[in-house]
Image (cartoon, rainbow, N blue to C red):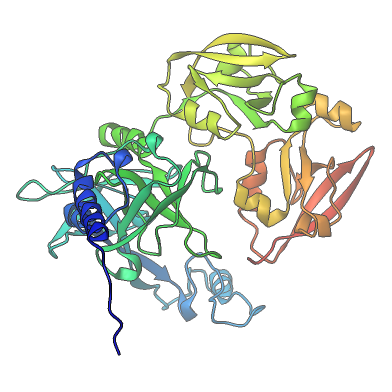
Length: 484
């Protein structure tokens, strides 16, 4: 027997009013809306400007499936000799006489968003890097060949250009600074090759640092982002782009990251005008301000970026900034922590005079700095990426005269271990907080750039030889690089 549903007149009127309010809410600004009845009208409006990006890369291999780089084929047993190297050494050629290299094409999929009716498409750098062919596929199935206008590895952004007979549908930029944790957002793209997939969620955090690069400032969202979504837009309820979907947490579910559109817009303008990004350079090595350091440097709280060292002849040194200064404001912007300063500096025009406020021995001081230009080999900050810290189980910073005196070590150059993760590779190798690394793989190191370059050449599972100074004594240590 089907139960009867009783509905009072007052209740029916209330339901009608709720439906009417939901329909009217789409004419209101996003911040003023109530619960969302349906995303369908918004989806219909934005998806024509979201594209599928197909790339083709030419891969060249040697015999037995070995790449030209000589790495072992993943299907062969571990420890099997490197046959590629054998052929190269004993037969004089990359693969040996009469064995031509094998070439094949590797195809990949990604997403992008049209941001200009003239055919400019914004996407991720890793979607198009190294591609021989790039094809942009519109919603209706039309395929357009694309060329790269410019790429920026540091922010993982790329700008493409396609030619079309008519103006293309495009999306306007929103303001990512105005996003609030809890705001509704849509992620649009082509996950797993499934075109025009839309997922909904909220902004679950802002300002995330995930170790992707020196300018990490990601929007975190629980709108599903999967392989193939990279380069697609994150949309607000006004139908504007507030982010470019970029990364996911591999070991988690429902956690994705997008580049804020305010940062992407700055990069896009430079790529469009110059084909590359020119960044400002302050010439300092910085580190986070902990509670303990805040007390030592007479700060009322742990904030700002501590100058661990200054580059000789750099803009900061010329202006009078010294090691031990805590930068709390840059060009009128508050420096909340050591992660925010590189982004502020990089986004400032080269040659501009800016005011930099610091705390020196408990007292505020202001310096006028003329920014230099950041070269490709220079780094904006002075710390290992978060991924490397986690992988090695330790954090490092450049040795300064003050630290050398405090640690009572008779050396002037090296890297100080500032923290060791219990149970991590560094801990298992016997390393301690306060140890000074003098050599890595029998090469002297005096800064983090040198350490990172050497580390990048070490394969997972191998041991890395370190020469360590502990007090007045030195000893060798082998730290094993985890396989995953």
